[in-house]
Every structure is written in C-alpha cells, then in structure tokens.
Length: 195
Image (tube, rainbow, N blue to C red; front, side, top):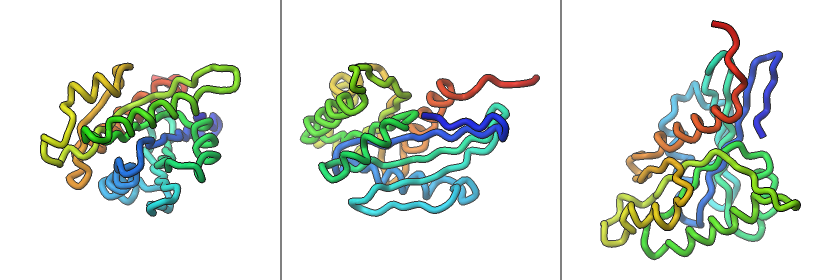
C-alpha cells in the first residue's frame, strides 16, 4: 500500500516485477538501474540471481509531493512464497515481465494464475493493482516468438498497457515503468494542493 506522509508531503509506492523464471525480471531491474541517472537512485540496490532483487528510486517532486519508488523483482518458487505474499500485500502496482517466446506461453499463464490466487485475500476479495506488461526476448528471431497479437490475446485480456522489450538494448523497459508509475500515481496520489 502507498505510504504517505502528509506533513512531509512524501509518497512511497511499492512496485513489483512479476513473471516466470528466466523471463528477465532481474535483467529488467538492472536495465532500469543502468538507465536512470545516479541522482534518482535512492540508496543501494541488490540485483543478484536467485535472491530478492530491489531498486529504490527517487522521482523528485510530482504534483507537490516528493515521490519515491521501491521496485522489487519477485522471485518464483517455493522458498520465496512468504516473501511474495508479504510484498503483494504491500504492492501498489505490477510490472508483468512475460517471456515472448512461444515455448514459454504456459509458463507465463501459470504465473498469471498463481498471481490471481496470491492477490486474492482470505475473504475472496481480489486486490486491483495498477498493471503494465513488458514482453521480453523480443531480440530473438521472430520464428521463436509469439506474434504480438497472440501475446495480447493470451496474456493481456484486461487491456493493460504493454510493450515489447529488448532488455540488452533497453527497448520498452523505461516506457513500461513510466506507464506503471503513471497508473499507480493516479490511484494513490493525493489531490494537488494550490494553484
């Protein structure tokens, strides 16, 4: 949940990168880190295979509020189940990092099914979170990839903003993050005060 300090006019949003193993979540986080000016990186980062990777960012003043982001690449797998639940309970938005390869379609669908279960509380109420999608591996030969229309039909029935991503080149990474931040701010930012 967004953390607001009205007295200090600060807003902190927690955004999660979610996707199947080897879809590129940690690589996306590293690409964001490498493309954001050092002055916007608010503290240390941890991007290490097999661990919970995170990146704090300081967006500066937006609408009269100092806005900070906490980005986490959620690991998949059994040992991380409690961490996933804790972070999903705190999340303000999701960047779905989905593998664009045709052979990974079922892996993507499995993650989406698990995500639906994980973000539904004990009373059966589903948390509605700001969501954007980044289809990774778009640098691979086209014959290995699902066409964009197929990805959208299978994985984006809600019509979330989506981009194709070439992580080594950084294509689509910041665009997807910007869309997610915009959606999360619209949901959580307090009304603008003053002229």
